[in-house]
Amino acid sequence: MEVQRIAAFSDGESGGNPAGVVIAPALPDAATMQALAAEIGYSETVFAAPEAEAWRVRYFAPAMEVPFCGHATIALGAALALRRGDGRYALRLNVGTISVEGWREAGGLRAALQSPPTRSAPADAALVAGTLALFGLDGSALDHRIPPALAEAGARHLVLALRDRADLAAMRYDLASGRALMEQAGLVTIALVHAAGPALFQARNAFAAGGVLEDPATGAAAAALAGYLRDIGWPHGGAIAIHQGDDMGMPSRLHAAITTGAGESIRVSGQARVMRPGPG
Image (cartoon, rainbow, N blue to C red):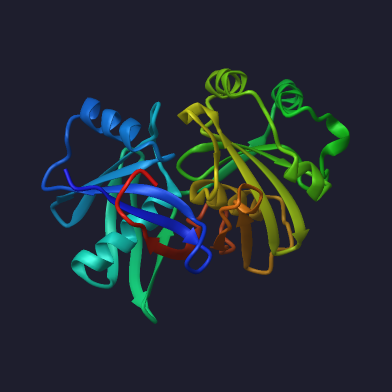
């Protein structure tokens, strides 16, 4: 199978989150997809095959299948634009149907996804305490303007807003302990965020559940965060920018447009760059 390697949410010709993209006449069996994702080693690989008027899509991390992956969807949108032309494509996921647009501009690539519906709920105090301890933090590190929450837009994330940018930069945790906590709570990632302004956030996403210490760009978590900010009445002004990956040396830039309707899909967009063949 041919594997394209595309970095989603790149910052020009650098950064972004690499994803494997496999477009085939039919999807392989799950075991084959899981093995290939582990071999590629990126945080996610997306598999797509034509199905009626849509594309059947599944996402695999090195250690698990995930219900929805934003950066791999952006990578797929870019790949489809290169293969089929600029346009909007319907995608049928395990969790429902969404869409992705891909287009070329000024010699580069951009893509935008429409997420699954969003929802959020306050996070359990015990889960918050355990997660803070995992990162060597306590309750004093939290920005209480954005209370801890479970936020979803196709996948479940724990959102913890930190007061100080320095605490975000210092993020460290044990992978095995993080994976156990996330599996017990049913989390795909833990999103640590810092509000640099009403419409600008810095973020880091722990992805131990998928066998990866950290994601440099997480489109699904961006959609979930945007939906949560809408739920709590945060003064976002209709959109937020998320800077992620800077502390990893992989700068990534995500944009989330936020409509007013509770639970409505979030449009997440960014640049994409085609990578050279190889493991990274």
